[in-house]
Length: 181
Image (cartoon, rainbow, N blue to C red):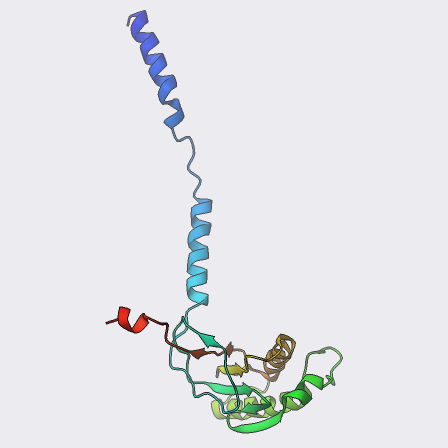
């Protein structure tokens, strides 16, 4: 091989060396796909929206699907479980926990939720400390404080409900009906 040819081959090799892939790192790609799947699964809802409890003015949502039929806890002027009024919301906000290990517990609400959970456990022949698999939908008034919502959700979890969801009133997006036609 001539010297000129060798020089040309060396120049070409140096010129195209920047295009060689020395290593392909798939970890960021896999992390991205896992994140996409995680968010897709956690934001998906299915089923039908339950009836709105009277006296509760829900916030509105313009996206998402409707929820399962489930046990409903309404928080408006009063806290209601299904159609049964449990207590005034003001009393729930002022309630002090009777368990020092659980400062967020609302005792009166806990007793009502615990009775409901116990009756569901008897129906399904579950043990006394097993979580209830019936979803509990919390329909909170749009003016409700988040600290009260946190206390209600913690109380429901302690009473034995493992599946708790928050509901909003679904409204039509302007132009959505025309776009779907």
